[in-house]
Image (tube, rainbow, N blue to C red; front, side, top):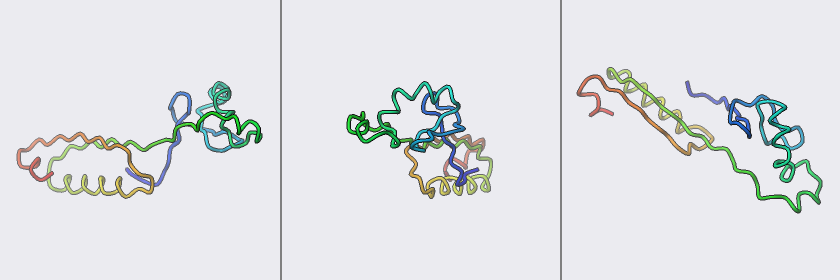
Length: 115
């Protein structure tokens, strides 16, 4: 289901993140090992760094984006309208969707014309 839950991913491996940088609160990690591994890169742009470090900071790290995958088995008019509501919900999110991938299976012939 689509909801307001935001799941952060690790800056190193892109797995589900459990913690974030305690200094800047902006970069997420799956665990302490990846946070320590990424520190050499992240410390130059960490908002908690000293002003001198920020002056020589590297360009900002990339921002996360939302990519949505929608897979549907459309076997009748109720499933078509449910899928339409699902897509409307995805597009109504506060965070813009950067990419939407859709995979449909329509076992009966008239349904593809409705979609």
